[in-house]
Amino acid sequence: MELVEFQVEVPIQASKGSIYTRLNNPSGLSEWFADDVNIKKDVFTFFWDGSEESARLISQKREDFVKFRWIEHEEEGEKTYFEMRIKIDPLTGDTALLVTDFAEEDEVDEAKLLWEKQLNDLKRVLGG
Image (cartoon, rainbow, N blue to C red; front, side, top):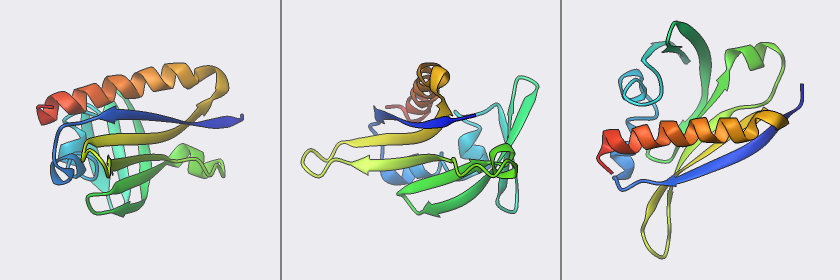
């Protein structure tokens, strides 16, 4: 299975701090990313409509980015990840969230749409 990298960027009118708290902890992530989120050490378990998936938090930098790897991919030796990075435009000061993820080539468009929907939920949560 060959996975290809793709990115989705969405402008968000909110402070880096308020965005970051929605990216790196279970209560913040359950507001927009999944129905419920549990954490055990560095493994986050996400629950959606009766299904669940776990991802390891592989790196993070306060008010900058979080990077996860799905446990299923880790077990298969995949080096894929999904990263949510807060970007500030140096000229305008505008804030955006840049997501980097991987999907099978024929599923990239669908995956992008899903991320856009999730990020719009995040914007709604943040009031932006």
